[in-house]
Amino acid sequence: MECNLWHFKIGKLALACIRRRYQMQNNLSETISKMVQSLPEALQMSAFEEFRRIIEEKRHEAEWDRQFERKKEALESVARKVKKQIKTGQVKEMDYDRL
Image 1 (cartoon, rainbow, N blue to C red):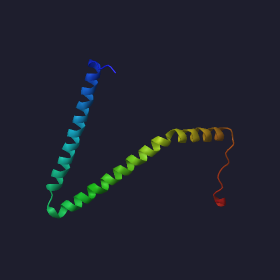
Image 2: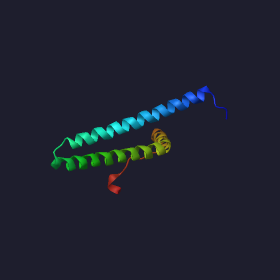
Image 3: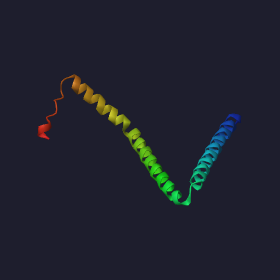
Image 4: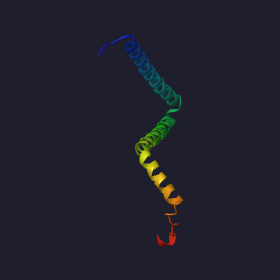
């Protein structure tokens, strides 16, 4: 593959983005660390546990989003099918007493 100036500029841009992201992550970590350290020792563990809970919640949300995105097309297909069935009168009202 021929390497030209365009490839060099794209590579340089990608590297700059990676560096910026790494620097931002370091800054966030440092900021959080300083915020926790600014608290009295008795409250530091409580703050740490709260951060842990928040991070775990955000991980769960991210996983949910990834799973939803992977299944989005199938869900949309089912929704279209149900809408069509409703429109053509193929759907009966649910009888909750029979559940």
